[in-house]
Length: 178
Image (tube, rainbow, N blue to C red; front, side, top):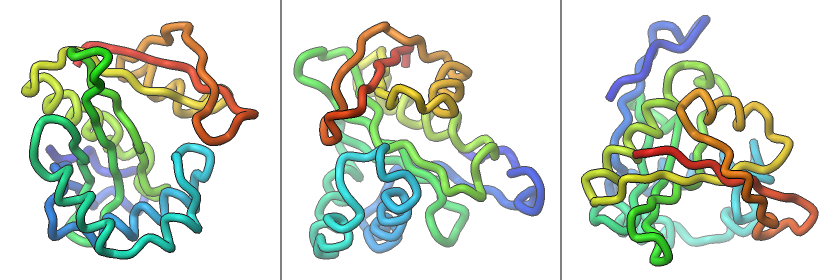
């Protein structure tokens, strides 16, 4: 998949969305640290914890999610540093469901068409694995993310859950067909 050109100076840039490969470990670590620095409330670990994790741990995680039908990570790769990410995981409680996690786009690439491409990559993988539904959670009050996911066909289920690591925050659940 290729994204639409980003507006402004990024208009000539393109990024291919694809599944991670073991060779992406160092670039994925750099993107993960950027994600946590830019949006610390959106992810389930701290920047300090991620920075302290050895490279071998990143490499093992990337190798694990590079193949198979249980977990996958997709990246936006403009042939340089990675500029976007979305992951998917199966859930034992609902065999037909893929949970989308860790969606992120580098600020200079936002509004470039990468979000639909990343979500479509997870959806394609989910369908190929026999899971026809997608679910994600958004922190209540993150209107930008909420509106973006609604534009992609996600519907607020009305279900509210405590944030897994920050007890003062609440997340809302959104679903759509894969």
